[in-house]
Length: 161
Image (cartoon, rainbow, N blue to C red; front, top):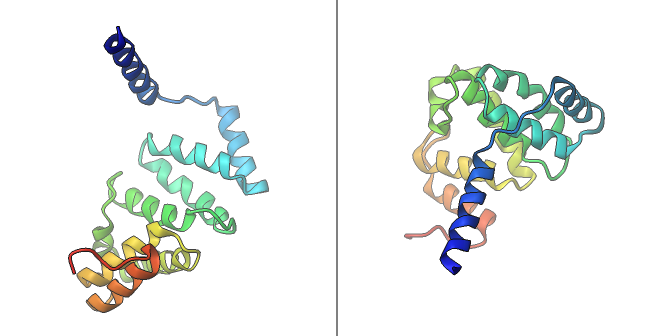
């Protein structure tokens, strides 16, 4: 009996996660309004999640909302901007190493936002910057800098050292 209950709960959880959230045009307009007018994190999160499951052209539409949310202290919108830009540019695929495939001004812009996010202590931005220093992407390869950023971000030394 216990196994049946556990299996039922598992199936229920999986089915809830697989359901696509559908918003009406009016609900989407309200979310956008709340983002622009109130820097509403919940609306931003809901819209970001909604866009993430749609056509890659919507990633371009999401970029200004990420810019708007950069004023919110606890927002990871700098990283969101970085990720959305790469997804828009590369047909929905996100690979931070694709930065090297962009034109220099685009690279500079994305690095700027990653660095801005790192000053807000965004671990997402920091992890990308650490990886870039470690691999020599955009920056000159600098293991010491990567290790110090890792220590500052996560509070312990880089593993396997």
